[in-house]
Image (cartoon, rainbow, N blue to C red):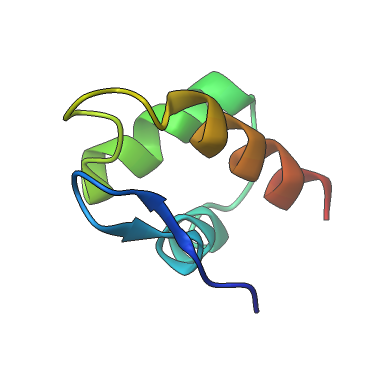
Length: 64
C-alpha cells in the first residue's frame, strides 16, 4: 500500500483516503467520493492546495 502525505494542513495520507474509499460499497463518481473522504479526513479544508492531488488519488483508487 502506498502511503505519503497528500494534505499537509490536515495531515492526511494516501492510506487515509484509500481506507475511507474502501469502506464504500460502490463508487458513484469522483466528486461524491471526494465529499465523503473530506467529511472524515477534513482534507482540502485548510488552504485547499491539495484538492487536485486528492481528486487524482481518488480517481486512481477508483480505477483499481
